Length: 199
Image 1 (tube, rainbow, N blue to C red):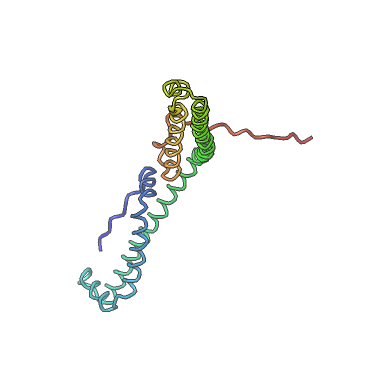
Image 2 (tube, helix red, strand yellow):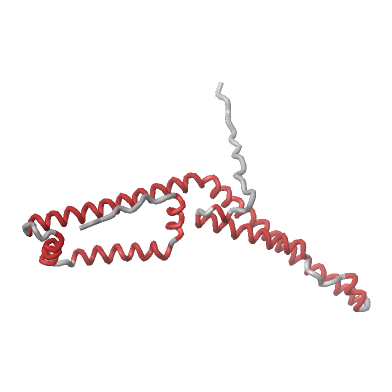
C-alpha cells in the first residue's frame, strides 16, 4: 500500500493552518468519523483488502503486512502533526513579546477611545447648551450659527477612528499570529526590571 510522507510544515504553513479554523473543526469531526468507520469494518473485508494489495501471500501474512503498513502510515501522520504543532508553538514563543505588547496597547487604546468618545459627546452637549443660551437671549439665528456652529469635532473623531483601526489591526494580529497586521513601525517597548542588591 504505497504511502508518500508529507513534507515538513514550515512556520508560514503552520500559521496558515492555525487560521484555518473551519477546516480544523472539520478535521476533528473527520477524525472521529474515520475512527468510527474503522471500528465498523468487518474482518473479512480487511482480509479481502489484504489479498488485493498482496495477492501472492497467504491471508495471514497479507493481513499482517497490510496492518503493519497502515500502522506505519498512521504513525507517520501522527508524527507529522506533532512536528507541525511544535513549529506552531515555537512561532508563538517567538511572537510572545509582540503579542503581549499588542495586547497591552489594545487595552490602552480602549481607554483612549472611551475618553475621546466622552470628549466628542461633551463637545456636542456644550454646543447645544451654548446655542440654547443664545436663543434664550434672542440672538438671531445667523449669529447663533456663527457663534455656536453645530460642527462636529473632526480632529477628535479622526483620532478616535484611527485608534479604532489600530486596535482592530492589533486584535487581528493577536488572533492570527500574522505580523502583517501589525502597524508599521511597531516595536516592543523595553521591559524595565527592578533589581535589589543583596548585601
